[in-house]
Amino acid sequence: MDLHLPFTPAVKRLITGFGLLALALTWLADIALLTMAPDPWHPATNWLPVLVTGPVTMLAVSDTRFSPRLLPRVWAMVTMSLVLSGICFALPQTGSSWGALESAGLIVLLLRTTAQTSRPATAAASAATLSLAVLALPARTGSWSNIVAGDYILTVVLAIIITLGCAIRALEVRRQRAITYVRQAERLALARDLHDLIAHHMTGIIVQAHAATAIYPTAPDRVEPILRNIAQAGTETLESMRRLVRVLREDNHTALRPGDLLTELAELAASYSAPAAVGAVPATARLEATVAARTAHVSPEVEISVYRVAQEALTNVRRHAPGAQADVRLDADSTWLQISITNTRGTNRAPVPAGGQGGFGLIGLRERVEALDGAFHAGPLPNSGWEVRATFLLHAPGSPQGATALASPPPVA
Image (cartoon, rainbow, N blue to C red; front, side):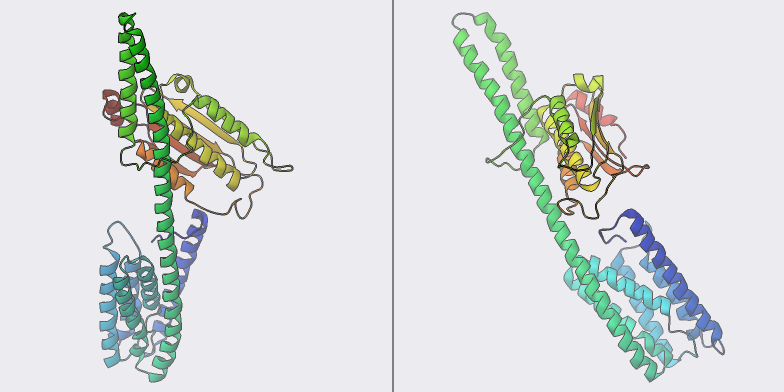
């Protein structure tokens, strides 16, 4: 069950642990009430909610790889609960609980159904039937005073749970819209970069074509090398377009020009190491590039994307871990280029990052890297630091080198 709540993994584990403890205590309370009954095992309606329907409902709440979809589980639990409530109304319990664990399970299913069911009509119908099953629980005691008091309390609880589920649903809708917006913005940024790359290649082709036309009457033997250069530039342009196919194009742009990647990264690391303000926490960034990375033939679109990954990663380090030490490492082999940015724990972490919490920068980076048939990973390190790693294919997927590279990519966690 993942409701995409804005908590760290440690906080989520803590919440899960407390939730399981609360359910265990609830079941113990059910069992204690059952043992206090004059005759716990007669009629069967005394122990069925405690020992059967309650645990089964909690199993329906949990998610495993063998679990069916949520809605079939919901309807199965509603049917089971309503049938047992009808039997208990005819054969009332004698001092046992109506099933506190079952009540908790149905309420959790109600929260999940309200928050996670994609179709609003289906979510409303499922929530209504779950609410009916919950409100029918007090009828198992056969006492009108218990029915009135229990339904009053359960009605308040159901109203709170449904409101919370709708709020989580609205947050998820906004999150999905934000993700869509970020992905679209990243595609447009890719399109602007591609526009610059094509203009760069085409300018060279046009200049060489004019030069070939000018020297052909006087030195025709010098035209052949120029034509080979034109063919190579045209091939590189086509590779850039194929690797960014399905990217929309925008004419108004301010893209990074293709340049020396190592120089750009060095300037980026230097800007990170410079103090952001007087009295700010000092931080340093170290750039390390292997010999293979320095001599690798990197296509312009990969070069720009590597820079964007480093730029976003260092920006996140400055925002989320002020004073952290960052390492930017560039490595390569014959087929892959990998950039990794790791940082230590910040020395003075603020409760709210500078500029607020966004959470969508990494989504844009993943979109950019995967558009170039690369692999992207971002996650915590054992020493409380953080790592962002992107691996790019140096050759186009359609080329023989690209086919070899796709057969044996480097491991990415």
